[in-house]
Image (cartoon, rainbow, N blue to C red; front, side, top):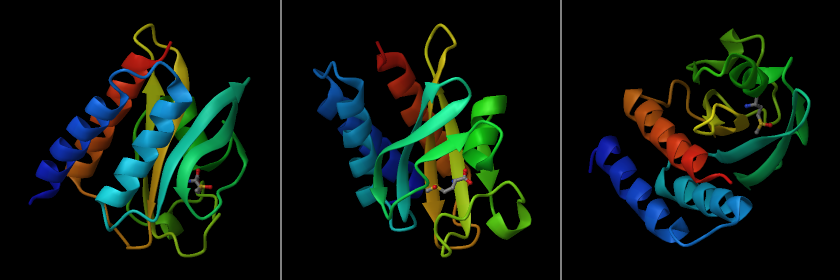
Length: 154
Ligand code: SME
């Protein structure tokens, strides 16, 4: 199976699992679990939610513990929240914004999650122990997941 096909499968699984759910945290938990177990190159998979002005709080997630809070001014997650742009970091050592919560992380992708009326709710953060682990298929797939969750928030 190509990575693209893996994303197609995991997205349809997440869609069906959260179809009748109304609680957004339950949707995020299910999504973190499904994504994390679908891909061998993920070692931390989860969300940082906007919980107060320019502040992100960790969770739900899968993997080792993450920093509990990340202000918008810090980290790759903060940069994603600030700019609302996808962050694709092929080599975290070359990115001075990266916060090293795990010394084994080598590359990461962070995708903002916004509602249909343009409110930023969270970022989806995926970290890998492999250098340059992510491809365009990851970006497209993770953006599709973020769009699904942004559309389901209430
Ligand atoms: N991706 C984060 C740091 C790792 S998390 O705490 C799991 C950042 O640099 O924003």
